[in-house]
Image 1: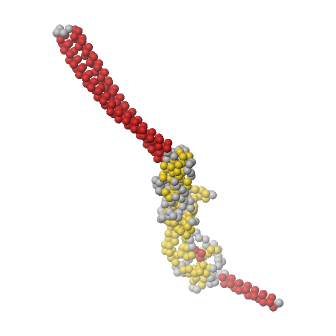
Image 2: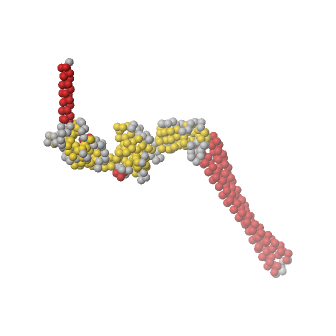
Image 3: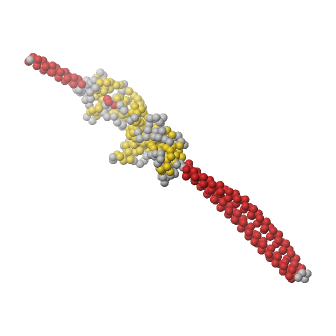
Length: 416
């Protein structure tokens, strides 16, 4: 029993010593000749990008989401689409009861026909009346000419006592009557011509009004047939068959159509990074529905006005989406956006997990002359799991990512 107990203590002691020896082998004993095990990587040259990472939302472009409504009042006779259904521009999506609108159209057409006939009648009878009055004026002028000649002759003959005074008086009276008839005929002609022109204007105005009324009736009848204004997909339906809608200043919305081929990302960039963002910079983003797929884009607009959310200042940035994405992206998807704010080529690169922090210094384990040492380095940009080294390492050297982490690992970031 005592021997067995001694054996247990002996085994435990061996295990403790073995663990202690292992820890001694793993833990750095000095800055020279460290005993480190891990994955080794060679320092290589290559490109690295400076990324501005932010969060946005997939949204329809301006004009790519349209609310379709009714512009006339009435009962919804037919609703011809449902949510998720593709539609083409001009396709009928709903019908409003329109019997009364058809009756108004027929009435407007009848009024138009009557006004056309009235104008034709005025244009036919008016010139005839003017011609008849013109003939009366011509006759009056001829009569005046004759009476004038007779009156002049009677005056000369009376001077020579060839005719009696009563003959001269009769000639004078005829002359005055002829003058009065001419004056009356002239006034009548002017009045007839003026009336004709006025009648034409009134008839033309009535015709124009009836034409406008007909157009309005036709437009209102057309409004009872509701059509899709754009190509797209029905995203919402807010009216049912049989419901009565009342058109007012704002048309009641029937359906909403969105063109899934015209989407963008409304991105929000932190104020600390907005200075790095420029128009036309390349970008890519992912969405939760397709975490392994990168959608490409570019910076299309940078708004000057900020948005403040939870006391944090953001600037809206519009990302134009490139390529075909219609079968994947949908409005309101959350997007994790990466904007390429800069590119450096031919720089020294190492895995970012190889970087350690010790005593306020940035260091890496490097193998030199068969020994592992801690080398102080200067880190530039960090992109994903790659880090740029601006000082402290040479191309071709070997760095080590320890299997244990005795020092604090560097956190990925934007770099300098």
